[in-house]
Image (tube, rainbow, N blue to C red; front, side, top):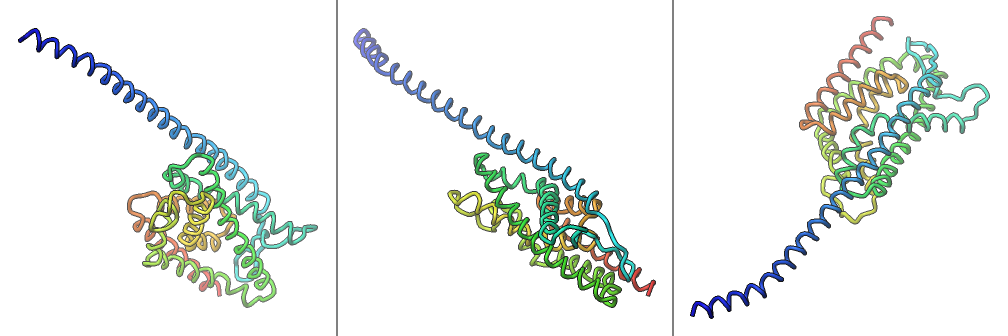
Length: 288
């Protein structure tokens, strides 16, 4: 009886061991495939990060160059200074002036927005080429915003040069604008758009993963432009070529998008803007 059981057991082992071997082999191959896939996914963001680092450095260097070459100012009635970037330089056409501004604006946006936008791009989990298309769409939206900024800036500064009354009121308008921009940082509208800007795809609900990367980048760009409108307005008022304002606004934008409690940062920046606006108005009132 024992000999019969032993023979049956041996027969079963002969059948089971090859099956176990095949199973182990399949598991090892599956694990190896997953390891290779994980390594490939890990390399994808690394390549994109390198591209973003190069773009960020180029943006910083270009911004420094434009600040030095376009940072000339002209004293105006009312005690403020107009940046010469809003008008063509001698021998320069309006088209070339606008083109120079847009190059400066794009370089500044890459330098200011890349640190806060990069984590959002990477979290989407796409390949580096798709991430590049997302970044392209994102910064095209910011470049489009620059076109609107240049148009409004040239019109306003041209009106200020033609009207001494308006020119003398510019500090008052600047202070009032800062107070309004700071107040926006406390609103539910700001929090709503800040939540949208912090999401992966530029909207509160995740978009389909098979959507075009360029379109997702454009959505994120629209979300960020809308969310950062108050802070960017603050920088325009304080001086678009003011390097201190650039650094401070860039830090505040990154803090809003990356820190765990964005509402605290938004309100803190709102307090700074309101206090600065009140100070400008008081200084304007004392010299009138």
